[in-house]
Image 1 (cartoon, one colour):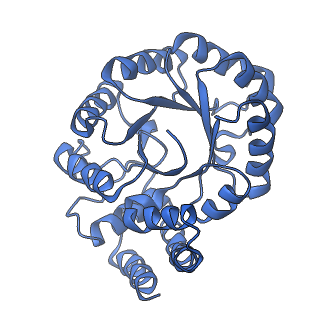
Image 2 (cartoon, rainbow, N blue to C red):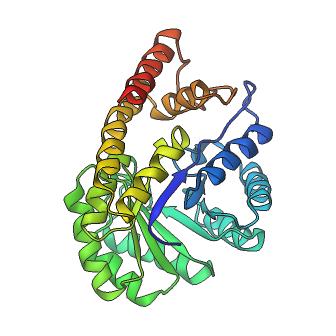
Length: 297
């Protein structure tokens, strides 16, 4: 793993709520062919919170087998149950995933000592690369840089972090403090529009949902940065800024991303688990306008 674009993959369901494995394979194949640097299964966009363990395992097995090491597969193993986290983490290693990702404890607000103990137990029982997932808007707590530094010093299997904080200064602090002691540690931003800010601060890229919709654009932006192609980078940045509007079209952003994927040509159901509401024709048109506006830039 390294610098670039990792896509937190949507989970495609049929209208009855069952996983649409055929379209999941098609979608992830498109991501691979577009050149993304990794795919994250069962993140927030993947609706990890609403699916059974057996369904999660089945999808991991199918996508890992189809990917055949052509890109990195990271699996979100987050849960309110430590036993489930450890069981799923151990399964992911046996299934051939490349890494796992865990969000900090949620539902009850946790103090930093409790969070540190939580991640320590995972590191001691899941023998594979582990990513922290910091998403304070959903967990009610934020991972402090000093705590992460202590954990990274103690456990070499912590290899990276997704920082979903809408403030680049927070991510910058993490980058500077952690990379001082572990230069190989990967720090990704969770917002697509922070790609350049993340890289300029010394980070490694993004784990952002727009990759589901326009993977070629996101890969093009990354390559432009790597090649010092400022004009292309500027153009891609303008398009991304427009496309960020898709997140705000629906009350639950997952639904808007699925609508956009469908409008881009993959004939899927936009079914999204509760608390999502039904997507109206008006919402579809608003997403379509955003896509057309970005394409016209």
